[in-house]
Length: 168
Image (cartoon, rainbow, N blue to C red; front, side, top):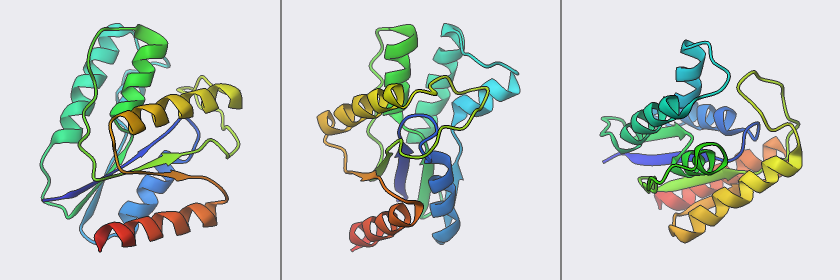
């Protein structure tokens, strides 16, 4: 059985960077990119409509639950991000909660926001609100999560310590 690790949080908080970093350092690990980004870039879209979101949600949830032959599966994103996105943009009545992860890293938005055509929250106040919404969902679902906050070196040390504690 694979150990499933997710990186979640608001945009421009280091999710992709740290998910890739972990996947490169663990043996027999695979990195699973955020499907929403892949889909929107392939369609040359900056915003998803409701049909796009339904598709993104379906594929993402399938990825989160898929079997793997790897010892570790590292996800760039999780169901909490989909739920918050739905709440902010679409307000569809669909239960997304799909806790499939052994460990989740919640990235705090303490790095400078970088312009990206798929990002829409340059204000740190908005990213902090998203962070809080995601954390509430993680608490409510009783998911095992660690908040990554501080310098890059501090975050890397927290990841290593968390992985070591988890594997014991």
